[in-house]
Length: 370
Image 1 (cartoon, rainbow, N blue to C red):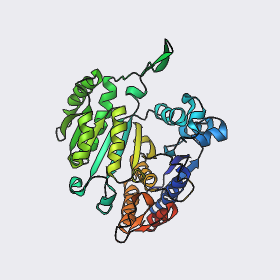
Image 2: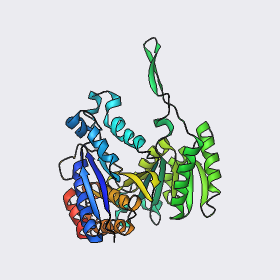
Image 3: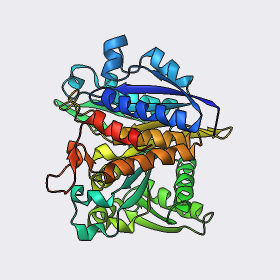
Image 4: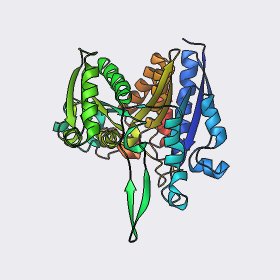
């Protein structure tokens, strides 16, 4: 039990963001009462909601709220129909999402991917490739590499032609700190780490492999293997059960974590945590579902809220140290799924005992299992 108060900035964003955020907050309120802590949850606009409210994707007031909070619970941003109407630097993904990552030094992204047995039908792989179950943790470096390296520009080179430049940059300390996160995560799981690189082509890959190998000496109980990113992408489809923890630089992690996410049956099932520096025992974190805004189903009570709800569980665990409360949410999600509740993304008419439910009804089922 804890009587401590935790301040949360809840930024629902665009599309289905407000709907799934509503369900996550509903679950958090039940958890709050059950375990005796206090959550001060303050909602604020971000993304196109921020542009509409204050003229930019990350309003000053929203950023100030985040700076005075203990963690950020995030929905999703970006609307494909509207994004092209403003300069690329002002679009929500760059002006809000990437800026928040940089602003708070959120260098470590954790994306757990698991496939419950009862949802084996939702996985695109044949059942024989699913083995006894898929359970992977992708650890992605989040503030370096191609996405943040300089120079980054598009320039005229004459004759009506242009040249686009992105720079992939990593330093030894950046690689070391994400490697430590990955190895520590592996110690809590099945003690195997697969480091992903392109050391046969990229200078970054060579340094990445050298540094990860050196860091591994601090973790003798963890088995380390190195794998080129193209082979890693293939192996995720051929034999995903071989992976425990996958350690990736920023761009490779972006791609492979989405590929791995498909193995869980739906992006609507998969949470993520982006963690920054730890001080006084607290880790500032940014927690969001793996999927996007899905504007085609927004406002229709069709979205799967589980990824947002599980993201809130990761927040309780990693930022607040409330492991029992986090486990209670995760167990309630499992209970709701085992009872046959299915949003459209994980529903199959051929599945015996399954019932199709909406966003709100799924949230209610999870609350009932708390």
